[in-house]
Picture (cartoon, helix red, strand yellow):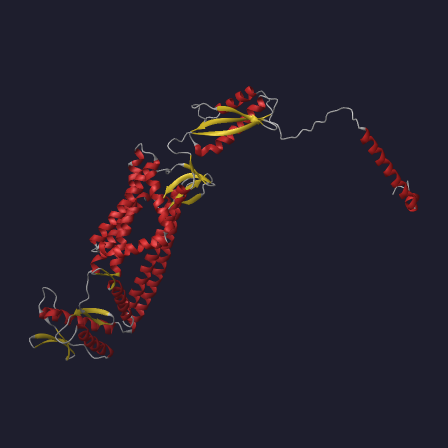
Length: 548
């Protein structure tokens, strides 16, 4: 079995292959656009024999209707086939079983052929077609054709399944090569590739089944007419004008070709800019943000200029699109104002560059690395590898913390509280020792310890350290706190718990004469009330002293 893991097709050249195939298909089918159906076909059992033109007062369609009806009558009967040519009015005339069938005129001849040569060719074609029609109506031919049709259906089912299997295998291999733990752009490329393969698979399956159906219906003389009609409908649908811009009518095929050219232009621009990024800009001293700005400007510039050139080559007058552009501007102003605002903000971000690809930023509650700056939105990958899509306008309307802007060196603040019994100089020495033990703490500028305040329960210090990797600040703080705790324990510096102490002073309690008199009166009053209760409640008095 073929091992797809050994497939070494460079995925970076996939866009080049797609571009080549697009242009090949486009220019292959372009001649079909300019073809004009100026003649009517002579058809027998759905099979076209030749085409004839107008003759005198009879149109081409009227002549072919007469010929087709006579051919059908001969097939329906079992009489022998006799095709002869006679001269009538100095023109060769084809007779079928001694009955008039067709007069060959000068308009019917092909370039480089005479009237007699054209008449002989057509007479031979008619004779062979009628003999073949009689043969195709025999029982043996129908049995063989039925068997062939069944085999073709089985082959079509097998190929349809095989295309789906190849697509799944290709996606699986591509995902193994593209998807990594820290490659978010590769996962986006994988989604685009999967969508493209699904479209290609659906198109190939449709073409496969349509070809099989047309071939099978073309095998049987009774259904061959259906094949011809379907083909004629498809050709007519794709070649008939459906849109007129200026003075030029355009058919569906022409529009498909134009869309294909524009699609190929987009792929070409993306392939060229990716090649420029990976092969040229990556070896320069330009930072990643400036590289992305150059790539974005070049890509959209190529697409814009290329679109104008293609429309001009296609024969489309750009001035005829002014009304459409005006309508779009009104629509953008009212219904698409948010999109327009984000698009304008994207241009400002590209030119002004307050943020760049690779910067570590904080936008509201989101913190992460800028992975992509698009036309409408910006992608931020958080430290949890979660992609956040932020509209471009948010970077200009609200405050954004950019830790990597111009100079990535940043200072971190680590508050530390110790007991009041600690020596401040010993605490300062311990914190500086902890900072010196971490390799990601810069020694220039030097770490610094600030004595912040006398807190409720602690002496509050703050360790200030510098780092060149702000995107790793949370890990750096965690490591430093581990080291600080270890150093403070070694130096027996206490980190107190939050507590509240209540102190009561001892001494002699003295009362004023007024307070002494008031207390005596209150005691006497309570004694009188207790005596009254005892005299009025003998039950309670009798149970006095009983422990219940």
